[in-house]
Image 1 (spheres, rainbow, N blue to C red):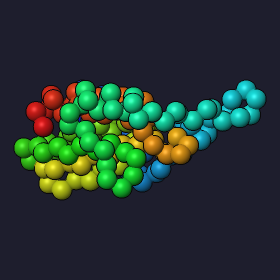
Image 2: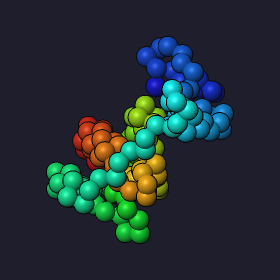
Image 3: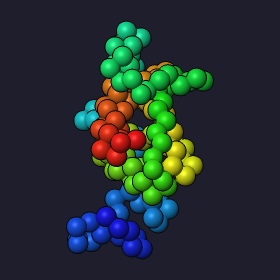
Image 4: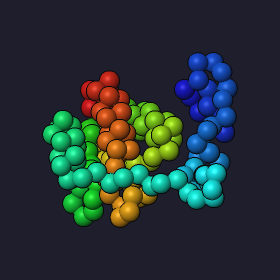
Amino acid sequence: GMMLGSRVLCRGKQLSHSLGLLRGRATKSAYRNTVCAFGAKPTPPERLSPEDLSSHLSEMSEWKMAGEKEAICRTLIFEDFIEAWGFMNSVALCAEKANHHPEWFNVYNKVEITLNTHDCVPPGISEKDIKLAREIDVLASKLKA
């Protein structure tokens, strides 16, 4: 859709911008705000075993281990800035729906994405990262990035 002020136009309907980014609002993680019936927070996501991680990465050829920390990363090159930004918009909507957000960097037509799960103890790569990476791959294939 097309953004106007603090609203998003999507197929002719005006919707409140769910990300709160246009007004500069940051929302706390739903995970941090969730309390179970007994007052305890939900169990954090499990970190993938090295074997499971290797298995997933063997099926996801565009994703590599990030250098400094336990994370996976991918670099995408698009036709131009508008295409890169449109892709990032699509990823942002998927990430918000999953409540799992990428670390990313954009210069003109290049988008670098890093995924890891901060909620793991210790932080690392979880199924949340693999699921979002696969969704990113589908969006990128539609744009032939």
